[in-house]
Image (cartoon, rainbow, N blue to C red; front, top):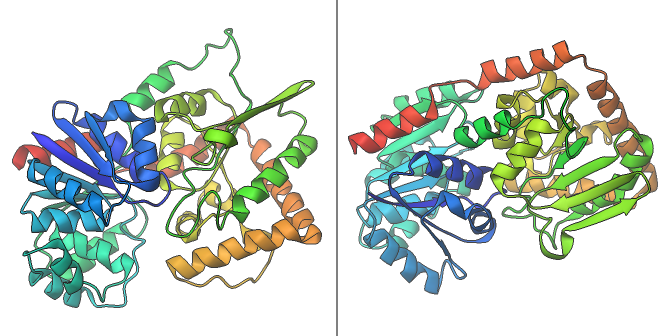
Length: 421
């Protein structure tokens, strides 16, 4: 079976889930197609696919390539890429939608109305189908994709069961299946098996800082990047405030090309790298402390490796959503928040405007020395709390996250769909 695969361009979360799912289907021909940050992640983890096609003009000449790939495929698998689902429907290819943020998508249009639009979507062309759904917001497009897909695989998270019930009430007839963490289980097992023995050599680093993919519909490495510049300003102060950290790995999508570097000074060093996913998992497994942009995929990977990370401040609105819904956990209580720096600052409850507001907050802190001093001191307090946790407390924090995010094993759920199809 030839499976055409793609992922939404919002950080590395969707693309990392796609890589994990692709590795589960190694017996099939797996063809990736996409652009931007998703394509960058696919290229960096090319062993998960049999072919990687990057669309340099996804809405121009790339559209014809995508149509040809669809015509040559037996099945389509999309991680939150609503347009790929719609293209598969128009091409009359069976399609599975994988969603690791199902409870996140906001909608003002009633689900029953979205259902009606999906039931009458024209299949003459992708352009016609897109026009038919044009009044829907980007979030509503993802919800529509669930109603259009033959099957949905939904990663567990607080609130997911209520959303699934709402879809049932809207008379959704598609198959919706709950799953636990959508992660690279083989890579996690290899990373865990590679942990150093008690009397063996120590880890490569004593602190890992993972910024994730960073790029999305608004954020970029060279635009709306105040968050990245704030991290750059703060890193030397982190080493000053915490001399115990002598070997620091900063990793993520931004740290490629000229941004990848190593800084050495007497007694300490910092490496900035964009690592292949399995190499990153090995570092997560053996680095004793980590600071993590609070994306759900990276959090699942950390906890399944027995590691409790400390959440960095939010880059975008989805991070705010994640922290809010985990507020009653140890991870959520310890998490860095921009409200520590600007108490009472109102964040718009919408993906684009909420992310835009977070960019503005990061910019204010970066440029205002008094706000920066508060950012530094309040996060130092969070780090102190994090470092003071006993091994028992850290294990308990990992256990509560595992329990909260658990669900049916992803390999068996996905295998059942493709076998049935």
